[in-house]
Length: 344
Image (cartoon, rainbow, N blue to C red):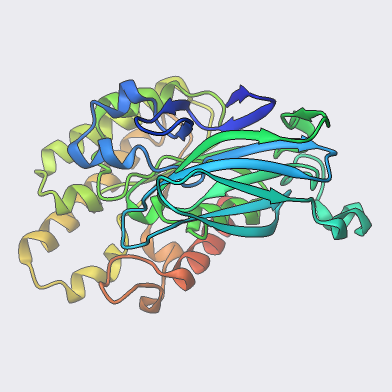
């Protein structure tokens, strides 16, 4: 969390980007990101699930933003404005163009009883909190104007009491409608999304940095698929996951830690045509089960088989690998149920 200009940036650091006068709320500090794999260095600039948060009684808000071009074919970056847990407006930013958004708080929220705008203290966000979020891409903050009205970061009572940390592949990196967002909203918790699309290689220095963070209450790890696709030998996968589990167990022995199997491993092997990937997939899953058995008595670890939270092939897109909107919603809601069962 970073405070600047009376705003709270839900990010690891604010990063200056060359050629644009503004700040990118980065999920991973540059000194860590620059040591990741080739794709990881690029994906670390993705601002999905980072947020700009503030509280003001101003009726007119002028927010100036810019954007980096999204990776996959889109010419513009979607930005959503929420008040509390309620989506309010969406805007589309042209990459490289400084754009000023002008908006006012939704008047309807003031007329709604409090029990309908928040489920209870410490659950979800208070409706007074304005939240700016971007889709996959790069959001850049350039400035804000509230025309003489006070502007402040939200206080702890206006935010969720608990926070979940997510780390994984593109399934985790996903979008604002991805399963981490769905699960977090269902549970009424905040979340930190450290998914690295196509680049989740479980590097030890990243495990060290993630484990050094203190502002989370439980963590979910979705590991394996990117290392399978990158053809890492099973001993490298085992070594890296074991190191991650070691540092998290040592630093956070009481916090709930959830390991999820690669997705959708339990039926992927039935339709894959490449034997090497099938064999490596099965070996990775067995490694995760064995490591879970090894660490279960040393920390608060939990293992979720993919079939526990993804039981419908129609959750997948036509590539039979990535989840689509329905799949993310189904998985997020089911994951939230499993996390409740565990005691979150």
